[in-house]
Length: 429
Image (cartoon, rainbow, N blue to C red; front, side):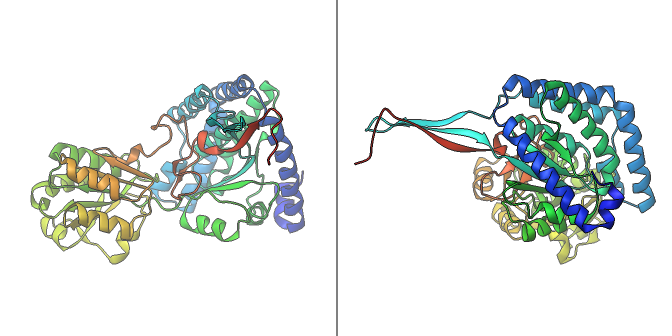
């Protein structure tokens, strides 16, 4: 295989490299499509064991990435996305085991019926085939994407960001150990060994080899993939997530949910970026919420009403309502009840995750029914927008589209289906 340097210097080598990766992936996908559940689970369990056995290697690789990130001046939120600790690595291992424990999605009978002529028709889940996953700075996505694809019988071609290159390679080595232990093709989970952007361009044109592309990252990456991909794209757009505090909200719930939704981890896609509050309750509920957020180090940018309530609030610009900060910055706006909140979310949201805090059943039902987002919540932090928290073991991302998959993309969403028809000699008149 060409070295990374040679590939970067010679676009011809990128094309050759990607063609070989694609060829191996397609061959591996044919094996995985019929791989028994116990064999796939053995690979996953062995991969989890390898992650635990190689903690020191993974931490050393991550420190290389962190040193480079610090040298490049990445923000605290971005470096937090990149950082691995022993606890986070254990979380990767337990996440792999959680995927192994899930029911096998392949071969599920989704529906079945018998026609008057005696034909028995069943809709059966099958793998998608070869999945290309392009992602940015979070190294745990290497494990999540690889193991979810494997469990669903798909081959994976992974393209991580340069920020996490060392960490991703160390984690990928553990996944390969698992595949070898189970006797599955090592090419079932491949990582593109170059950061040359031409490799992404090649991946997006590999029709007939790659069946679907899953991009996970910033708007620039998503837009490039959507514009250039020649195969279907399962898109994850901005996470401009909202929490709306209704006039009937429980004050303690409002404070706790707002602080958690914003400050638990500011750099994840499920972090709240805009807090909306019913103007009828702003004087009563908002000061406590702002105090708690500012005490945690959050910068507040608000409308005129919010500024009047707290001198520490900076003026919000029109752009703030459309910004995914991924940082300890929050825009806060007063709205005219649940209708005003819904209108704001429809105009400025990204259809990712939005939550209402209220004890009013009518307001809750209006919000949950009318907000057109992949995930809508009642009295819960938007930080629960995660496949693991949904009991799905892990996720490749949150799909904000409406075709094929919406919301957390887990093993079930990484399958398609085919119709199996059983007859007894029937012919059509």
